[in-house]
Length: 220
Ligand code: E4P
Image 1 (cartoon, rainbow, N blue to C red):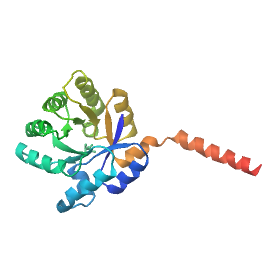
Image 2: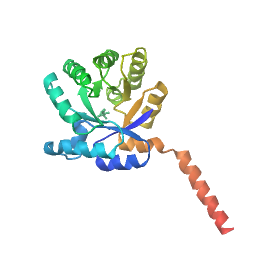
Image 3: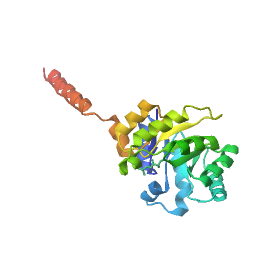
Image 4: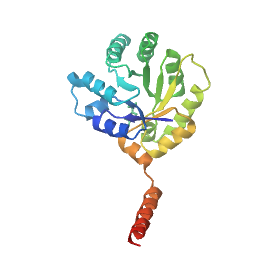
């Protein structure tokens, strides 16, 4: 499984990239708003992210119609070679994905909450599909179960092009662990949860013991 960072925060991206595990970034309008970014700076901000990351960077269109999505998608894709256009899993999104894919522009279909949505996204030409986990949990439904179903269903077919599943709306290291066991290709993880993925109390305890014992060696 590959790790993507789910953020638009440049400092977080720079830090995670330095760990050697960062394979891509996903952004969305909420994440960009959280940085305090303005509309006029949006394209430059995406360009900066693309420079920091050696991998795909999803930039989302906020258009509601297929024509506007295609126009946005072409503009976003022109910003950098590693831009992936993020579109919602709607009828308009499918139609725009079909067009953009035919032009060689990779699309990540987002806000995917069901197996039929995922299969349709893949059929329309999506390069990435983002089933959301945490938002199911937020409404007391089984987000990991839904992700498992999507992974199993998508892996049943050959869509004639590369399709990767991004476990999205990830909230915890356990979500990441379960997504990996299911065979999700990618997990896109918020910075705080990504840090937790490398932390373990037994690692800390073991390190502490090694340091104390080494002090004894130094004082012997
Ligand atoms: C996916 O690409 C989305 O940006 C993201 O994972 C949404 O997560 P949230 O449910 O925490 O907002």
